Amino acid sequence: MLRRWTKVLTPISRFGSQSHFNFVNGTRQSYATVAPSPTVEDKAESLVNLDKMFWSKPCSLALPRDSPLRVEEPDYQGIKRFVLKLMLFYSKQSTSIRGANVVYRRIVSQIDKPPIYEVFNLEKTFKTTFSLLVLHMWLCLRRLKQEGKEGVEFGQYLYEIYNHDVELRVSKAGVNLLLSKWMKELEKIFYGNIVAYDTALLPEAKPGDFPNVIWRNIFSEDGSSTPDNAAFQSVQAMARYARREVSCMTLTDKEALFSGNFMFTSVKRESRSEKGSQ
Image (cartoon, rainbow, N blue to C red):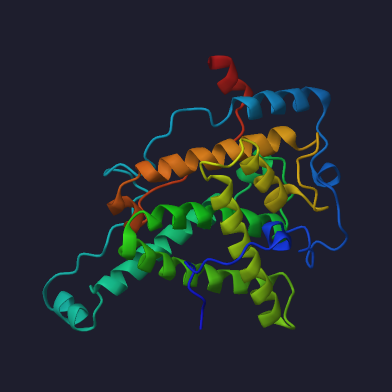
């Protein structure tokens, strides 16, 4: 039986960070050793790009009505629709499950593609992918809570889809023995991260709390509490990205949220031609 995602766990320091979670990565490495080693020119360009990214005013993430990326509910007619109704295809639960699947595909689309790793100078490992997956799950679940009981129920469907996908990812990563043990460990990490992100955005939180949580949960491999110099720009940029997505999700209407007809903000490095045309 899956634990409900809304259950609040007591924060445990080792679960606020994933530094202990290295069963796939092998030997422990620092951010400086796993981050790419760009040339002086590329490094300067990267720093400029990172410093300029994710400062724009938040806006709704909902897809336009005419967007080819929209996913619409099937509109069957006649006898087929009648039969599907009898089979509860159009019930609230079935509709919510289909919507939650679309939402999860949006999350996976954002965290499985190269740009998010290239922009933030992250090595694509199981650990970093899982960390980004949890971050984007948090963004969605946080927004869903704003819709009250209906949002909480939808969030449970989303969490169950996430849980199944994580189990498949763990298996593909080569962990076939003691799978249930690792799933319990990942569940603790998930809840620890959710609590840490929410706490870092409380009104009484300090300005540096959120970037430090981003560092510990996604970038750090040695358990340090604050970003090192090599990662500072990347961590700050990701913190801006996540904060902006929180605001954008709040501006995204309920229909787009529950149908999955939204897209996270594009994450890509500015090209030289784009920079020259500005």
